[in-house]
Image 1 (cartoon, rainbow, N blue to C red):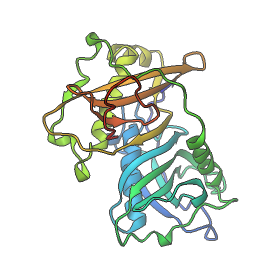
Image 2 (cartoon, one colour; image 1 turned 120 degrees about the vertical axis):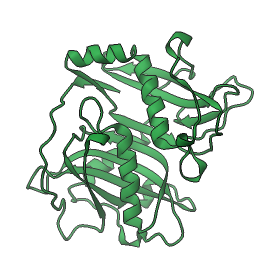
Image 3 (tube, rainbow, N blue to C red; image 1 turned 90 degrees about the horizontal axis):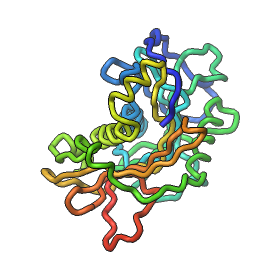
Length: 301
């Protein structure tokens, strides 16, 4: 999470143009405009929407549906804003930067706002490294890796480097105090289950968001910060995995560990979703494995 000045004015619509020259490597471009249903209270694109549109961009690039398995690294360079036109540009991840895994493809995504006529200096909102389940017949041969000299090469390589940097050291994940946890222990309803029986990413992101809000003092604290012109936004995402399947009707809760840097401006939060009854792990980051537990829970995300 990052504390910074709030900016809530909608961006004017812009013409969608090419972000690179014809001589650049093969890539796929998915076009979108951030609508009212996509944005948060700051009129910034809600962070879960980046994953949703990346999954759509990957599917269009492959010519068949690709299902997201993990977000290995995501950097939010700046918020995409309400009304802003975006090109989601997709490349293959360089083989040297990822391990080969059967039935899995890793893709690089760059969100480019078409705000500059000079395509050599693209306005990059977001970069990410994501893995997808690869169905038979997916036409990924038309994609290439980004090459040195391409205008998106440097921000995409920075995202890959971020994926390899050591993660912050966290204490053990723990639930929040009971008085702050009323809305964080919830029942798994049908809308929480997504493709293949996995936990629906948007549902998991919503629970993560509510838990982080509780960490900083709840909605009243957010409202107070907003009145002072301060926005609390996600600035990076690491190691989100969707690995298991929730059970309809079971109770789950979000647990976390936190560390801060830059004099309290940046907070790194390790979050997991676990079953309330058994402690079975449903969703979250694999950055930290619990110790001193006889039966570690199963990771779903």
